Image 1 (cartoon, helix red, strand yellow):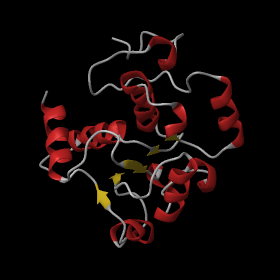
Image 2: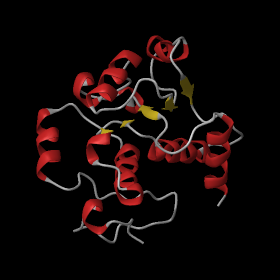
Image 3: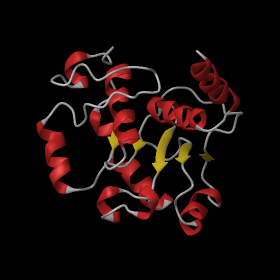
Image 4: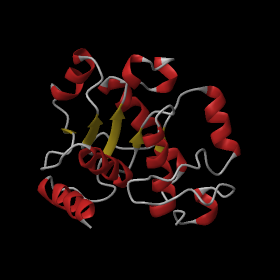
Length: 185
C-alpha cells in the first residue's frame, strides 16, 4: 500500500530499518495535558533520552520525532538543535492526515517508543507494536504515573483501540494484543 511504500522509502533514505531507531510522539492536547511529568506531554529531548535508557534502548540509535506542532518552541529546540541524530517528522511528500499516518507507522516500527497515555493515537501505536511485531510492552513508554505502571505489570495490554487509518475495527474488546497475537480484523 502507499503508506508502507512511503515508510520504506523514508527508512532507506535515512539508512534505517525496523528496530534501528527510537521514536517519540510530541503531543500537547490543544494546551490541556495534565501532569507533565507523568503524562509525558512535550518532554524535552534529555528526558526522552533518560526514558529510552531506562527501557534498555540505545542513545546511539537515531530518534524519530512525530510532532503535531503543539509543543512550545523551547521544547522543539531541544530536538532541532541537538547534536544527536534526530529526525523531526516524516520528510517526504504527504498531505494532512497522511502525514500523521506515516509518522505513526514509523513509531510502530521503532525499537523504543515514547508516547503519551492521553493520546488515543499513541495507545494505538502501542497496540500495533505488540500485535504486529510482538514488541514487549516495556518498549512503549506511555506514562510515568505509578498507577498506570502498576496496571502495566498486572495486565497483558493497556488499550483496546485499533487504529482506524487501516480500516480495522475493534471487534476483540475482551482480548488484548498480547493474547491474540494479531490486530483485530
